[in-house]
Image 1 (cartoon, rainbow, N blue to C red):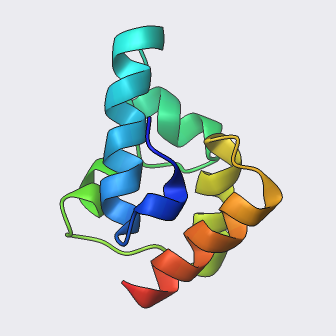
Image 2 (image 1 turned 90 degrees about the vertical axis):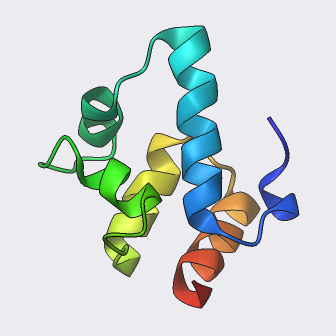
Length: 83
């Protein structure tokens, strides 16, 4: 997977992350949401589709669920605010 620093859209990064993990680890939207401590199993899919946004606290939980490093989390949060 490409570095997060190559992205200018957090939605595209989430989708790419999901698609890669789906193939390698059989990740589902439900499992991804649970790992991010999000109650709705389809919320992250809606975010990727541009039908919902991410609040800062939710963006932090998503970045933690993706196991991003400190600087990657900072960049992800900035992307979420920017988009």
